Length: 536
Image (cartoon, rainbow, N blue to C red; front, side, top):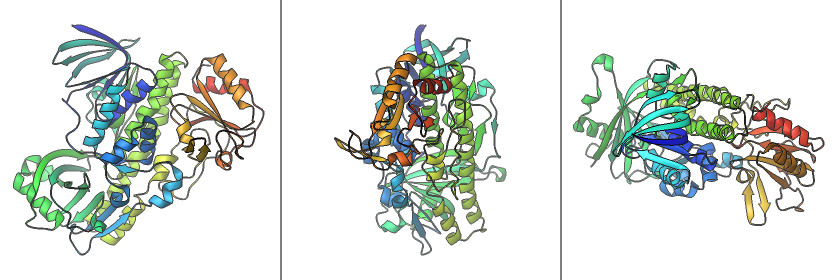
């Protein structure tokens, strides 16, 4: 049997596992990703990429690839309801793109998972410290105290893999989670679903009937746009307690379902694939057991309404990667890893709950408790979820609080109120530099970043703290009047800083510490680093 030593073993080659491999590699950590399927997904599955995930993709340099492969925002970031796509009662409402635009240098996008995984896999395989192995089955993952061991079998034979840590992103039916004995909590299964992917020319539908997702009542189903062209998907369900099963969905039944959803009885249709799945809202009771971590659907399963599941999982990976890297590089104490569950579990639970609230709107419409007009009003209101996807914040030992209260938006699901309060995502603000306009988010990266007004004196304190601690800190001054390399007359106010203030942003883009005013202090910065990195 061959043997292989890596720092992190990643189980699962979907978007979450690939994202973990990419981000760990950006931190210089060696990884092996194993995926039992022979290649990336052939089914669209998830499609919505939220604003926060697009910001991560911006940092990875793949936004142009995603936008080239996906569907135009202005046309497809919408929801519709009606009896069918062709019915006179069809109503459509688009996302509030213009209202949300100032909150980020990018915005949510639609790119089906089968295409997205190709982009992510290509990036992961290009990273120097990453190995990606599809068609590889893992058995016998176990924690051996100072690391983990697993046997991986592929077409070349069996390999004993030794790693310091393992990350399981192996889906809702996670074998790793089951092996660890970690339970999941949530309501009973909400629905036994069937996704029917088909190809048809729907160009006869006017643009006001094109939407990412349309909920239809005759027959009850949903229609999803897959590529903005000829590929679409119908989602419907069956009742096992009434004798229903996936076997009921013969080619003719699928054809009838598609034609009924479109509202054209003789529509030429090619059925491309049929996939059964369960609609669930579950959260694991723990995201870690020893040296093995759970992420994505292995840790939490959201309903598809809202498009949160894949995104929440990618942000799991983004949160955990820098912590694993800091511990493996010896710049952080092992207790930093305890903050993964402390930070991500509450966010996952809230995200799953909000996805369930979205699903209930559809259920109530299908059951006749809401009119289609009422349903579209509620669904349209919840298509904008920037409060949820940008406004979440962490409270843990890896955050140094500054005593300021958290913002309290009237609608915390929809409304995002920018703040640089510790624990929150560092706000986006446009800056003017020698090469044009850049976002504050573009200054962040796979290391700590200190942002401060020009002339504050914090640059020297950051340099001394980095030299003393061994922690890489990128320190950046921003002027208000154009006297420095980067300029913005408003950013300091948006970050809650006076002329002598500074903010320390963690490698995952969340603020770890802030001094709104006061004198530059190497000692204060060192104390903040020691706290965030569990070094004291």
